[in-house]
Amino acid sequence: MARARDKVAGPESVPPPGKIGTVPTDGSGHQPAAAGRRRGVFRALGLGLITGAADDDCSAIGTYAAAGAQAGPAFLWTAPVTFPMMFAVVYLSAKLGQVSGRGLFHAIRDYLPRWVLYPTLVGVLIGNTIEAGADIGGMAASVDVFLPVPFQVVVIGTALVILTLQFVGSYTLIRNAFRWLALALLAYVGAAVLARPELGPVLAGTFIPTIHFSADFLALLVAIIGTSLSAYLYTWQSNEEVEEEISHGRTQLSQRIGASDEELKHSRRDVLFGMFFSNVIMYFIILATGSTLFRAGQNDINTAADAAQALRPLAGDAAGVLFALGVVGVGFLAVPVMTTGAAYDLAQTLGWKYGLHAQPREAKKFYAAIALFTLIGVGMNFIGLNPMHFLVWSGVIQGFSTPPLMLLIMLMTNNRRIMGERVNGRAINVLGWVTTGAIFAATLGLVVSWLM
Image 1 (spheres, rainbow, N blue to C red):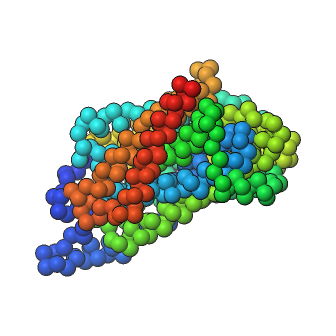
Image 2: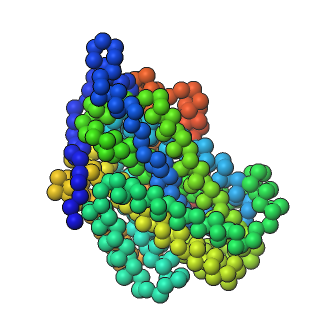
Image 3: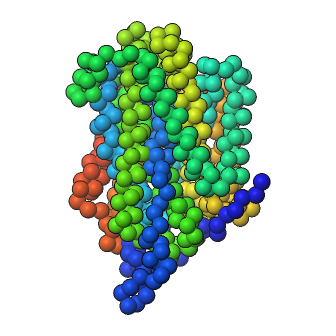
C-alpha cells in the first residue's frame, strides 16, 4: 500500500543567526504571505499526549507498580512533584524544535562540538534500544496474563505489527494511532478503582511527602525520577515538532525556523495536558498496587506483568486484566517512539535523509536504522536473559545520559544564536534549572544507592 509523502528532511545549511527565532520579513518589515499563512497554522493537538503516554512505558509501569507494592500510598506524592519537571523537559524540547526548525540532535550537530555530540548519541542509542527490547518482552509477558500465547510468538508478532505501521503508515496516520493508543493507559484508573483504596492513607500519601533514608527507598525514588524524565522524551518531542511542520508543507529548514507567540502558547497548553495525563496515570498505578499488594504484604514486584498477576486474586480478575491490557496498549506506542527516536538521532548526527513523511526508498538508511534497532530489541528476548535485567541496565544508561542532555537543552534554549528572541523567560528558566539539578541529583542518588 503506497502512502503520500512530503519531501524528506535531510542535511541543510545553517541560516544566519539573526533569522533564528524570528519571523522572516520581505525587507519592508512586513511578513510575506507565506509566512503569514504559516503563523496561522497551529501544531496538531495531542503531540504532548503522545510523549506523555510514551513516558508510561512498560519499564515505567513496572517501576511505579513496584513503588506502590513496596511503600504503599506513601509514594503518591511523587506524581505531583515530578509533574512540573516533566512539563519543563518536554516543553523546552518542543520549543527547541519549533523555533530552530531542527530535531534535538540536528541542533546539537549544528551548534555544539563533536566531542559533545557523539558520546551523547551513543548513550541515547544504547538506552533506547535496550529499553525497546525490554518493553517488547514486557508486552509479551503481560499478554500471558489474559491470553496463553507462546512468548516468542508474541515478541515476533509485536515487532512485525510495529514495523508495518512505521514502514507503511503515513506520519499523520501514525500520529493519530498513537493518540488513540494513549487512551489504553486509562485502564489503570479502572484498576485503581477496583482496588478500593482507603481515603485517609491516599490523602496523606498525596500531600505529605515521605522519605526514608534507606537504600531500597532511595533507589526506588531515583528510579521514579529517572523513568519519568527519560532521555527519549526529549528527542521524540523535538522531532514531532519538525514532522508536524513538514506535514504542513514546510520541508526546508529555512521555512521551519521561528515560532509565533500563539504557536508557543498552543504548545505549552498541549504539553501541559500531555504531562498531566502521564502523571495521573503514574498516580493511579501506584495507587492500584499500593492499595492491594502493599496491604497484602506482596512487596516483591519486579515487572508490570508481576503486578497484573498479583492483582487478580486481590482486586479481581478485571483489575489484573486491565493492568495487563494497559501494558500491551502503551507498548505499541512506546516501542516505536524509542526505535524511531533512535533512528532520528542517528540520521541527524550523520546527516542522512530522514523523516516519517518519506517513503522508505527515499530515506533508506533512516528506515534501515528503525528496522535494525527493532530487530536488536527482538533479539534480546531470544538469548536467554531476563528482559528485566536489560531494563535495569537501560535505566542506568538513561540515568547517566539524561542529565547532560537536559543541560544541553537548557544551554541551547538560552542561546540567542539558536533561539533569537525566543530564549527562555525567567519562570521557565527557573523551572528548567531546578529540573536539571533534580536529574543530576537523581543520578548521584543512584550511585549512592549502589554504594549503600
